[in-house]
Each structure stands twice: as C-alpha cells, then as structure tokens.
Length: 238
Image 1 (cartoon, rainbow, N blue to C red):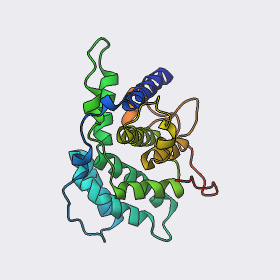
Image 2: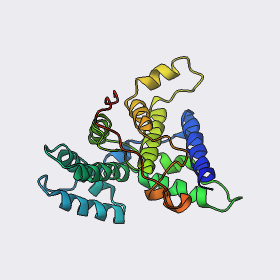
Image 3: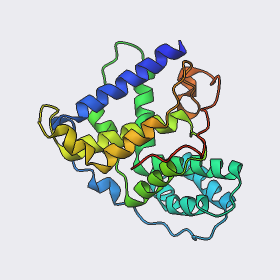
C-alpha cells in the first residue's frame, strides 16, 4: 500500500512536469508572487527564535514571514563550529522556509488533497495549483548552499516538493515544446532545472521509500529516516 501510494504521487508529479512543458499549462505571469511584502525581523536573532518564527509561519501559512527567515536561517547554518544536530535542524528549517515562502508547500497541499480525494471526482485546475510558485535569489542561494554542503539528507517529502516545483518553474519559464530541437539545451541552461536535478540526486533510493512530514498521512509512519549524506561525498555541481 505504501509503495502503491508513492507511485500515485510520483506519477502525478510526472504528469505535472509533462504538462508544464506545454505553453498552455502556464498562462499567467509568476512575477506577482515573487513580490512579497518585506517583514522587519532582526538579523541577529538566535536559532531558537528563528525556529519559533518558522513555526508561526507554518501555522499561519505566512509566505512573507518565511521569506524573511530564509537569509537568517542560511546565515545561522553557515556559522562556524555548528554541531551536527543543530546543523541538521537548521537545514531542515531552511528548506521549510523556502517551501512556504515560494508557495510550493501550499501547492503540494492541494496536490495531496487531490490524491486523497475519492475516485471519480473531477480534477481541479492543475494550472492554478502551481502558477503562483516562484523562487527568489535568496531561495536560490540557500538551495545551492544546501546542495553543496549537505549535513544529512533532508526529509524526502521536502526534496520531492522542492525539486518538482523548481522543475515546473523552469518549464514554465522557458516556454518551449519538448519537440523543439533546442528543448534540452535550453533546460540545461536554466538555473531552476539544474537545481531540480541536483536535489533529485539527493533523494535516497530505497525499496521502502521512507517518507516523513507532509506525506505521513498517505504513506503511514516511515520505516526509516533518509540516509545521511556524508561530508566526504563531493558536492553536487550547480
């Protein structure tokens, strides 16, 4: 049952990526979402305070608050002498802040609701689910740092949501058909696409496909956590 449900998630994400390759899938600009109201949060808050703010952003689904926390969490993660447990907590929190601020978390909440809906119900407008997802330069910087400086593998649901959202954004931005002879070359030059590929490489390959977080309700309790990535592994080129 766990593997079957994962297949439904994976197939639907693949379908979304295929749809995203068509110009008709995205008909509105993503720029409006990227213009987020700025919040004044002191840059020198403690890690505990930042995590408390993030809990507030999660509870209220507050993209502006999450966006303000992203550079703060990244700075804290880059601090010298950070213990492994604290680094793991901050890296997971940083991914959460990106997912909330970009709109990816909300979009995947809708996607999970779709998968959980009784069979036979009409599909909602998939375009509306993902058209508002957008990433800022601060998001890109944080994602690139996490890929190049892995502490341990983040929860798989975070990686799936972020890599799929980056891929969808890339496909929407280039506005090319897969039949176009320059399709793959253009994709390979897109920052979102390359980040999506790098994040996908971080997803652990496991017969059980362990999940935690958002997918728990669908897949049941995880049998194991994602395997940690060793710092001895070479960083993924972005």
